[in-house]
Image (cartoon, rainbow, N blue to C red; front, side):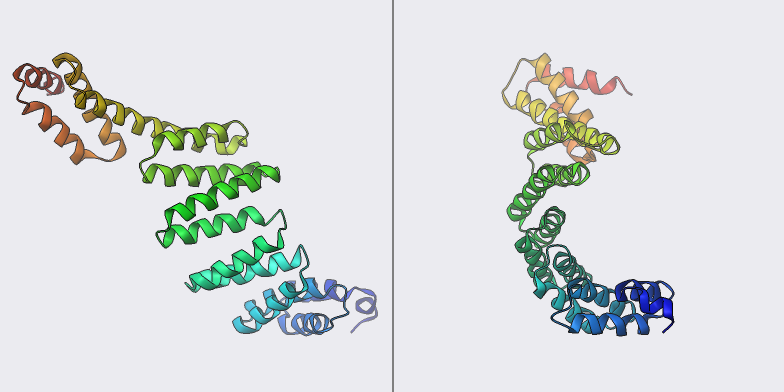
Length: 269
């Protein structure tokens, strides 16, 4: 070791060695620091060791190092270690272990990582078909991001929540979420939020058109509702549903209504 390296903090030396590709030397320094319970930088060293060992392909060694960092309870580096564990488990498809690691992030309560953990838990819940749990986690992610002045993550959580609500047939609730998000969203997130809001409004429009038909309005109003519903559904990729709506109108027992629908459809012929 050179005289300059002797004067350089070990963590900085390890970082430089890792950046230069000497992972073995970096791991040796970090392992020594992480093994010392009295080392003030133990948590940071253990996280660094986890990263270096993973790059070397030593997955179990990396996890052991991450658990060492997690056990310190350090608000920053223990949270990083829990995220490292969780992401590794997710990559391997080990959902339960990943969920436990993300829960550990929440238990640490470090504000910068709480929204990310909620988002991850929402993703895992959705993949398992637990949509109520996913919705709750997304709402908590958004609230935590807002509390932490993280507008970008708050907008991301709102986008995912709105998408989930739309999939569950709740466009009105989705629209409310999106309108609230637009009030504080960063400029780069606004276009996507607006597109999602438009989709929510299309779904709401379809519901209103269908309701008008079901309510049994006069022939002219019903025919208009049928046309609007049949022409809007394809915008949501529901071409077969649109054809069924046209067929309903064309084959209606009310001949006046059927004739009105035929005139409206034939305008494009």
